[in-house]
Image 1: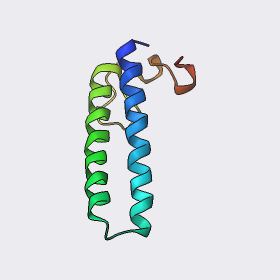
Image 2: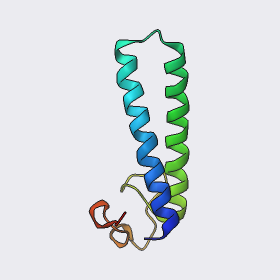
Image 3: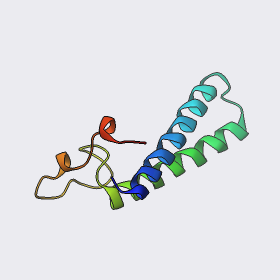
Image 4: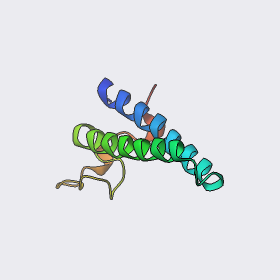
Length: 85
């Protein structure tokens, strides 16, 4: 796996964690405007990183942001457990 792909995937995992945690926080603090704005920012960042990763490194899932191209190459990219960090 190309080094840039590893960097993008790592950043995507970090921002996905932030997004998830802020969403859980907002479940119990729905009036926290600062947390809400941080959540929206995290969602935007996650979506941007997913598009960037898939454009450069390949699909994150079969139904990702960019369609899997013909010929079917989904199995050509490493699985998460095959990536060495």
